[in-house]
Image 1: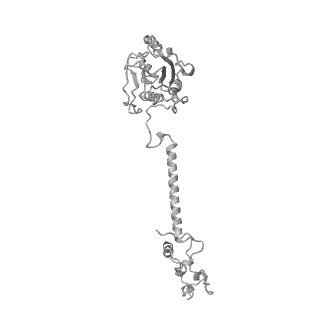
Image 2: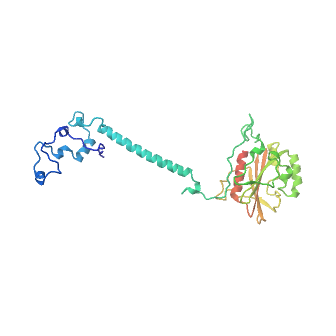
Length: 334
């Protein structure tokens, strides 16, 4: 590709520029037809010699002359050599291209980051009903304390305060007013046992005394769709006592429920979060037909802590937020 002359005019030969115009020359506007038809003076320089053809000018820049070649000294001073000019043009073209791509890339990145995912064509995600929780963070342990289930803490003892291990409420929810909380999210054994049939409460309360129950903490919330969630963490003196807890199982006597059965919906809900392989997690659901509202329960055994999660909702408890709540609570305990 040949480069165009950007100086505006082709260089003229030196002798042409310095040659004075003929004294008897008449401007073209004032010349008569006879004068125009008259032959040019012999010492006048032909027009072709005064201004080289455009093709000759382009060829001059496309094929630079070697030093000492005729016409090499005629280049105006301060004008870059043809080779340098080509490098300059190439640099400018690449700079423009890089600038265009950088601006376009920045625009695309902004377009992907700024809108909601559902507003970006090709990246929309169908709402599957999951809740939006605050960022989860495990509590800071006392100096020298081991994390649960670490190599030097195989029993899974939790050295953090139990209240700090409760899953936070999702955005848009309100605190459950029916949950009787004491200081530092503590609930009494009687408050926890209200989740069970009255006929089973006395036996379970005595088991708490026999099996070394230390404390129960809880958190509850209600979401706009009417789902009511209660999470209880029961702390025992040692991890072995959680094996004796009778508040979970297919024969658990949940208050107001005729029959509880195992919930095998892990992975069956295609829009739910991936079903984890958790041997210490059990799910239960009220058998159909249900009454005005359905009850689902999730149990997590984690060292010296036993988590019991209840969700109730008029009609039916949604699978996705139920699984989501259990999974996230399990992550905090491990």
